[in-house]
Image (tube, rainbow, N blue to C red; front, side, top):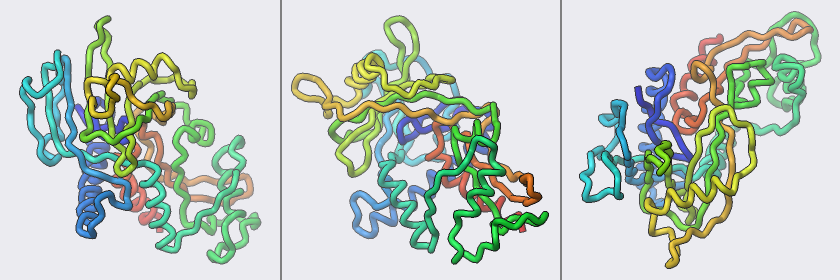
Length: 329
């Protein structure tokens, strides 16, 4: 079954485990973000503070798609395109209204919203080599006393003074939680000058008959666009590969000619690599009761392992976490 997954900061369909739950998270996020964007437009904000923006998403297949696009009835303005409007060698194409994310701005906005709700940000390096229980014990000692936290040095066999911890440590959970089912999906992207008019994705076939994916995702309000990309399962190398960068640029040229110079070249600002935190069996979103060596019990809600879909899962997954935390009373 297909679902959406972010590549860069937008949506393309892929096959994934436990689709029903994850698809629901996707739909909740899509609908909520659309509401946010509409509210910002009512306030006269061309590019909202949220860092979100709506764009036409164009998707092209050289062969396929091989899976049912179940989400076609859930997105706005979905339609199939005829060959007169597609690049050469494309056999199938669609368009719909999607959402792109200016990630730095979006994260900054989320942090500000937390602060507006009287949330407190505490930055501290915790000991993680000895496991999650001891790391959480250390975290308690760093909490502001004004929060009404009782003495974290107490060693009686009692519940933690913290109602619940949320563990969203991505790839860090592989060591912190001894979760060997986590593995990286290496993604390399290129940031170029200029903001593309639309989101474009091509599921192509190279001259050697190997499949590839090329995508161009505007960063709303930034004057830049993300080009990609790669999807290397189990690869830990975080260094950008110059040959991969060249391949990404070549594959994206037909998608966004408006971003190229008169000589047909992009103005490259940077190349970067991210290790997407994937997990066998899908994301972990559940409650665990941990007890440290001093008898202190701590309630943890785990939420990690979303692979490349962390942003598009975000609202649905966060609502699940809230329900789990609320059920701990």
